[in-house]
Length: 227
Image (cartoon, rainbow, N blue to C red; front, side):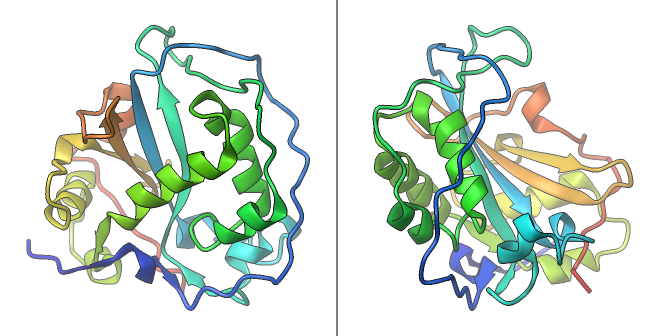
């Protein structure tokens, strides 16, 4: 199945962000876990599915109202992983030396269109990777800008679509990324919620473990187009 690609920038079509933003206060939802970092996951949320029935919710208006642009894939977060942690355990909520500023928050909103999401990803995950928010988001943008996505509208219309075909379409659009490096998360109804790119410690694509791989290749899949 041939699927044409488009730059990741096109996923935030006509992105228009507010001139000023504030940095929300983030309250940890779990314990501090200092673990050695052995790899990373770039989690990419499929915005049309996330925004279904959230268009008017205050916390999601930047991403979902349509007044700030139309979004396809957006970055959910860049997450450090650790093989030494128990199942479901990873580095998180490390004490941060640097503070996230309103300017740094705003400059990332076309990639992560929610001030609360930007603040939370730094506090929970970025703080365990680097001392400064600026460095964390710079690395995240480099990975994000390197990606090309298939034509998701066309892919959504394929009869009998499976998670494996979504995986293959993303891999085919990106040299050096194989289907085994891509996790696909479907909701209970089979709708695409998230794609995950798995990386090793040096940010080279690496096989996803079972938890990150998600839906099996034969799992029936659907893609909501936001109509």
